[in-house]
Length: 230
Image 1 (cartoon, helix red, strand yellow):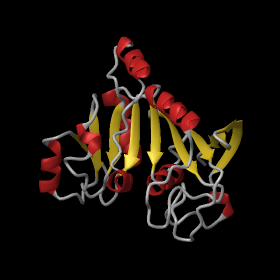
Image 2: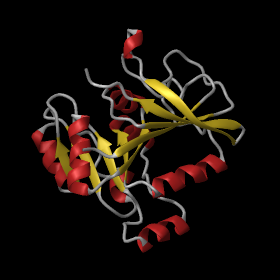
Image 3: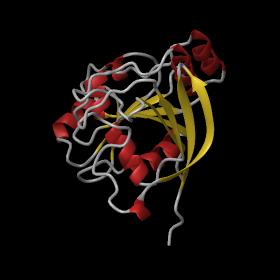
Image 4: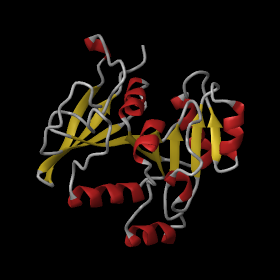
């Protein structure tokens, strides 16, 4: 068993999530900011990759006092569980995701993370070791479901983690805000980085379930159509 997994991403009209220098770019506006805060509050956990932590240093906390109160009144921590997928154990111990807000934090590492680094991280947070050279995402989701009670997981990026989740068949829904801008650059990151799929039968297929005009752009919600195992 695993949680329901949805990816939330903002990209430019030409499909870029930041510049070629991987600098954080404001793609959406206030309306989408409030939407993202709400879906964070509605999630049991939020997951990001180590690249996002090193580039943006996010806290991934719920910002709205009303939403934080809503979670507290439901018997939950004011912030969802925050998870970093970090094969080599590079998460800085003073990262905002470990220091700011309430609730549990988890670093998921692979077997290639240096033991000394894993011990250091364990002094600051919970650590899951899964996989040999790369984090075994399916195993992490199983642990989150069975041990931590995570039923709804939000994935915030970046492109490498999202691509890995999609290629592993671990995503149920994709929420994409498309901003009214062109960033450009063949080396600028996209919502699904990595090697990509070479053959059409391997493409991840989506079904559009909703579209909304917001902040001068468009919010699209897609259901991921999982292929039945042979």
